[in-house]
Amino acid sequence: MALRRPLLIVLATLLGVTVVAAPAASASVGDRDRPGYTIVEPVLTPLEADGGPTRVLTGEHRGAGYAIEVPPHWNGELVLWAHGFRGNGPELTVDAPPYGMRERLVAQGYAWAASSYDRNGYDVESGVRSTHELAREFRRLVDRPERTYITGVSMGGHVIARSLEQYPAFYDGALPMCGVLGDHDLFDYFLDYQVTAQALAGVRGYPPGPDYATGALPRIYAGLGLAPGNPAVTTPAAQQLRAATILDSGGPRPGSDASFAFWKDFLFGLGVPNGDPTPVTGLALEPGAVAGNIGTDYEPDSPVDLDAAVQRVPVADERARETRKLNPVAQVFGRPRAPVLTLHDLGDLFVPFSMEQVYAGEVAATGRSELLVQRAIRAAGHCEFSDVEVGTAWDDLVTWVEAGDRPAGDEVTDAETVADPAFGCRFSDVAAYAATPTPGTSRRFFEPCT
Image 1 (tube, helix red, strand yellow):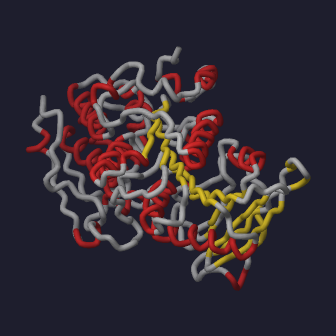
Image 2 (image 1 turned 90 degrees about the vertical axis):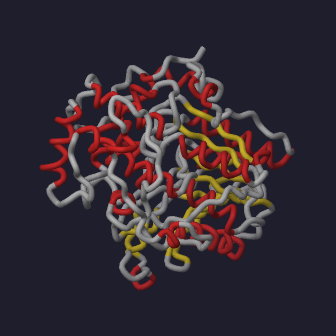
């Protein structure tokens, strides 16, 4: 299946590729590189702000590359950017904040800083540590900020959620977007998709072997009555897979049927060993990794009793998964001590909307729901937000932090509310739906909000 361009863009966000126009990268910093990696420093052209050009600093700190930008009339506050999953490549690269945030922050007087992290892969430990160390380095290079915010996307959302708990007095506000806020639940979800599809197709394909893509996967498609690149979902088996995936990803909600058609082939691709687009597969699906489904209740139970049919997969080392220690797939406990405002696409089936529900439940269990506001956006891509949606969320977070005015949000845990046809309209950018004629724009799966 040829991926549509907007999907490529949002996947680039997850993989840590700059979504905005990227400047050319400089050569490696050579002997300062972390062993096994090459640090590629960004070349950022200073922006013009009120009073002149910004001050741009790039370099390496404790095995990670970084970029810092300070406006000429700095307001004394700092915003940290936490990037998404990079893959397992050997180059450590740095992003500028996308969605027009770089320009917005500079215009508002904020300095921003972004780290490459000191390792690639799905490594939350590296992201938490490198981002915190960069914030401290900022104090040495520039000055001690009066406030420090943290924002980012996808795996960066996981980094943010754990950062708030790892350094509970350090950050003053957070804006995680399309974030992996449910930590291990994301990888359980990836596993669920594969074993449910296999059970419904009558194919036992776990663990996936080297011939999975050419052997098992075609038989799974055939057993389900699905075809790569074809959005049709017509057989009882395929319809039950769709229903199970919708329930597992956040429950019935606007655009969910069309979102399944948009994502189904991509999700099957996550089951291909060592295959593209990401080695998240290795974390989620290889035996003994972080995913498991012992004790999972599968729905719907008709026409096939999924609880009886689905292959059960244990987690090899439960102690490594359920730990308070900071590790590559770190656990999040729902204990923020600063205001958190989130954005999430309703139809995202890569990092699904259920991540918001898991996090809301954890935060409620610790008695801190007053520190969490969540907003649903009516799009099906991963990290598919308009500049207006992100900019509005940022401005509302700042007002919350500075003035104590808690902004409005969506109720994400009530099934009836989430299933309402108008759910997500309140914070979705109406003007963004004018782009629906653009080929591949996922907002076409949603009725425009009025």
